[in-house]
Image 1 (cartoon, one colour):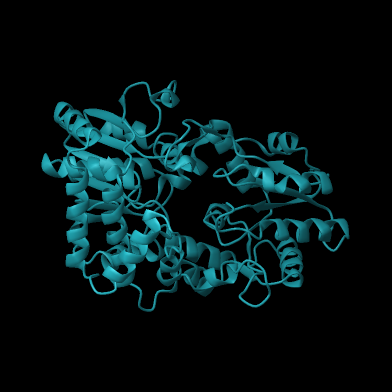
Image 2 (image 1 turned 120 degrees about the vertical axis):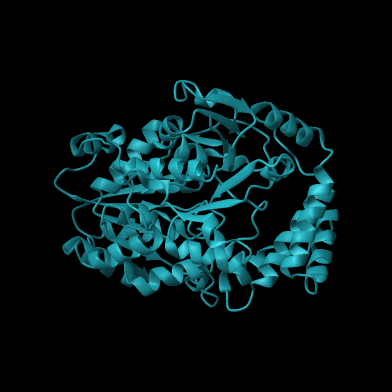
Amino acid sequence: MKKLGIVITDGVGFRNFILSDFLAEAENTFDEVVVLSCLPAKIYSGLVLKSKIIELDVFEESFKTWFFRKAKEIAHLKLHIKDNFGIQDNLKTNISSSKSNRGYATRFVFRLTSVLHSEKWIQRFNLWQQFSFKNDPKTIGYRAILEKENFDILFFTHQRPPFIAPLVYQAEKLKIKTASFIFSWDNLASKGRMAANFDFYLVWSDLMKAELQHFYSSVKDENVEVVGTPQFEPYVLDRYKVSKEEFVVKFGLNPNFKTICFSCGDISTSKNDELYIEAIANAIRERKIKEVNFIIRTSPAEDPIRFSKYVKSFSFVKWNYPRWNLSRENHQESWSQRIPSIEDIKDLRSLLEYSDLNINMLSTMSLDFIQFDKPVINTVFGNSQNGLYNDQRFLKYAHIVNVINSEATKIVKNQDELINGINLYLKDPKLDSEHRKQLLQLQVSKPLENTGKRIAETLLKWT
């Protein structure tokens, strides 16, 4: 009898592992499956019928726990800072001039880790972090759950959220095997340290496997499996498909026009989205771009209020506000508590399948559209000289360098390049198609079909 525990940390994990085929495949592969949820249990109603749901108490870091986690993360960034602009940039964002306790502590951590940032020191900081929360009532509660459930393997659907560290700690103490899925294409090459050490790792691609072993040198080859990602699996599942006619009616489109979709990032990294929307909408109004539908999909991670004036200014623009509902208030990472609807997955798939062109600021949505071999333009108008938010700096991030080198998308740095790129791709949508396929193979090395089954079978192999 083999028993699997699945830790769902956030709304994206819910989408990727509950609304894909993974859960059904896991239930077919294991004798018993239990979902340990960092989201409210009520959100699984009607979706999870066979597996048990255990809602976890939300762990909140003390100052001491935060301090050692921060030391671990900054040490990791400093260890890998050489020749990695993404990590250098991330390190800058951690600098604090605040006069709060955390501000003073952050500056101390920077001084401390300027000397102490070897892998051995990172593991020491990790150990001290564990000591800081081992007697916390919620940590003790996690142990009771794990003892009662007696899992063969505990699968974490995201490797970074700090609130999973106590659960991994208790699994270590109880000798329960742990596995983690690497959440996104940029997490290893530019983000900070994982929340904890895991026994096994599931990755998107051969590229990601190489990145994992570069940044985590102690990870053995046999403990990493390339499985693709369930993030894109809904695009090959019939239950999420809608017809083109339904798509046209839902968004009020002209069926005789081609469709441009601009997908927004959240305001923390995509601050120039308003500028790009205005540039495209004005070009359509001035007929520099002719006979097109223009749909804007806002980020599910934020309220779209920042675009409200454009709704009024450009009445011909269609808007897709993702149906992600906030499931819990007052969480330390409130964006993580936004839960996608089935309606939104259908909307997104139809946008990918029936739009003729996507425009975004270097987001993972490029890969979503490329799944359907749709042309993609990446807008980066801002630099360190022109007074705009400097989004051109992202061009030096390792995962974006791969995109640039692939020639799979058009990188545009001003309005003329943007308009020319749009008209070129609308005229010849197959342009750069081979480059797009090559980028997809680099980033997602397995077919979308049977992704959930592949992950479930790998986890069983590791029990």
